[in-house]
Length: 315
Image (cartoon, rainbow, N blue to C red; front, side, top):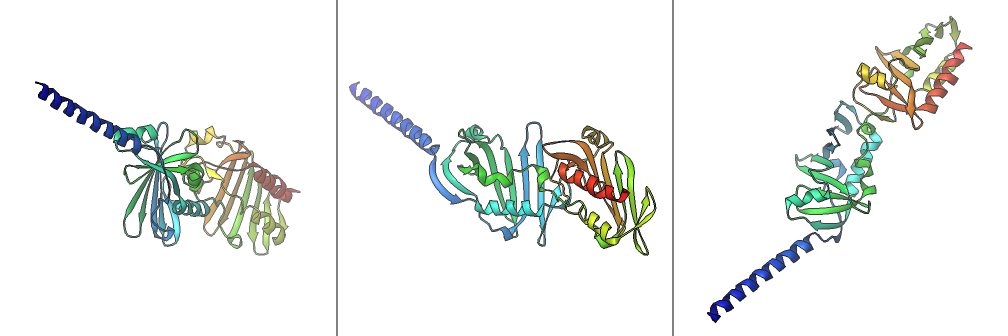
């Protein structure tokens, strides 16, 4: 009997030791270790496709970019050239992302504690060899210094400084092509300015150069017209707010009857810009017939160009 009790005690002791070892392993596995390492394996030149899924409160926002030759295009939610500077910074950031700390999360159910349910952002990146790389970004750490990052669904939870991911988590509309006017000046044939819904000034080219045809008829010097019109070309969309221009949406942004408007005509196409009297933080809401979505432009630039420049031809 004593022998049986001795065996039982040994068995229980072994069990407790095993449980303790398992506990210590699990505790150790989620204890951050300082690991400074670059986590993206490819160079910029190898990347040909990037998609980003953003798990917003009520919906999943999807954005995709594709490299064609040496030019990057946004292919979803609209198809157009991507913002060249911001895409360059995004790619540059990918190559320079470094983890500061890392720890293992062995149980899938525990990943939700770090914002992976399933994730805040997911990047799927492809290279020239057809390989895919998946990077999930979870929540920000308690101290607000780190994002939790998971690579290719592996068990390692990397901690990356939030400022290292700034260019990867911009608003979707910030990655869109910013230029509004791209008809070459020498190809322009007609320009019409609008104010408060009514035509204010109309200019046309003739055999001698430029002339005003509204609100009066008179010849204009090519130098004065060129100086004024070229001043509009640097005006850009700061960022897009939507990818649609439905009537109700335009009404919500005060664009059903814009305060300012201009249409450039030439080379068989048009460039247009319509600007609301509404906006915030120094920007006004705007849209263009040739672009998908509502965007914002600098309020000071708009007022200067319409009031100071366009109005000079009415004097």
